[in-house]
Amino acid sequence: MDLNQVIARAKAILLTPSTEWPVIAQEPATVADLYKNYIVILALIPAVFGFLKLSLIGVSMPFGGGTFRIGMGAGLTNLVVGYALSLAMVYVMALVIDALAPTFGGEKNLVQALKTVAFAYTASWVAGVAQIVPVLGTLIFIAGAVYSIYLLYLGLPHTMKCPQDKAVGYTAVSIIVAIVVNLIIAAIVGAIIGFGGGIGTGSSYGIGRNDDVTFEKDSPMGKLQQWSKGVEAASKNMEAAQKSGDGAAQANAMKSMMGAALGGGQVEALTPERLKSFIPESLPGLPRTAMSVERNNALGMQISTAQATYGNESGRSVHLEITDTGTAKGLLALAGWAGMEGEKQSDTGYEKTYRSDGRLTHEEWTGSRGEFAVVLGDRFTVSIKGEGTNIDELKAALGAVDLGGLEALKDEGVKPN
Image (cartoon, rainbow, N blue to C red; front, top):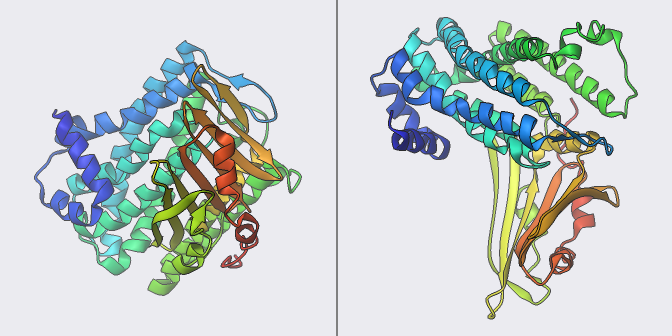
């Protein structure tokens, strides 16, 4: 086991997947080699950081409910059982991808299928570190899972030799199976350590089928219930499209599935030129020194980002970033539904998340550096980072951005489900 090689491979598949997948596909390997030299290392990341979060750091409960922790014994059991089952899940998923290969014009090869799963899961495993990050950690973790889906889509034509035009359907069916397997694993872990899985399985709390229970439409549970129904409907559309054999229908169904899973539906993110108009030429006392804008599109999911740096001759600089989360905007709405608010203080600074004028707001300050960020319309994030005498300077700098004008575009490009 060479840890440097593991790091190099993980970095390569995350940063340059298009060129790394052909290399991976040609490398000789065995099931044992893939496990001992890569899978057992990467799969340990979310297990360990999940333990730290649940048993040591704790989970902040919404609405001032305090911090929830599970005991060290239960936490360690969760770590061991979850880790073992995740290793098993990798192999089960490899069997599934191998079995599906002929259906999508690919070639059966279990070792290649295991490569596909192992390296596609890299993003999700690495993002497991973010579990300990307050508030935004959940979004980072989900972003890692979404990127793993993209890696799977890129890898299948190389490892399983499927035609490129069938990669979308192959990916979609594989992901649906992965979701089912994950739910099963969650139920098993919950049953073993004594919590979780109750509502999902309809057992521990005496709650049966999801249709038997209703919540207020605008309540957190009501929003989640609507989300689950959207995913269910998108799954049925995906299944129908797959049976039809229509490539265009499968591609559209895949977009709908991703939109439903991310809670945002199908959303066309703002064009780079449109987003660029919200980047000021200067902030108070700081002219703009650099700027970049881009819109990325993968599997029909769009996200636009604009970044700019401002500085003066004295050496002070701040960095502004505006993001249109596009298809993933439902994740920001979920943060709002769940009431993700809290505050932490230390000898060197503080960080807190709260709602101000109806907007989810995050600020932190350490020494002479800090960050101030807001979420607009459950879709846009605007963040400014840099040095100053206090957080008020960053707030004043962010005041130069037309936040109201950007928030007014929250429904632009949103397509009906």
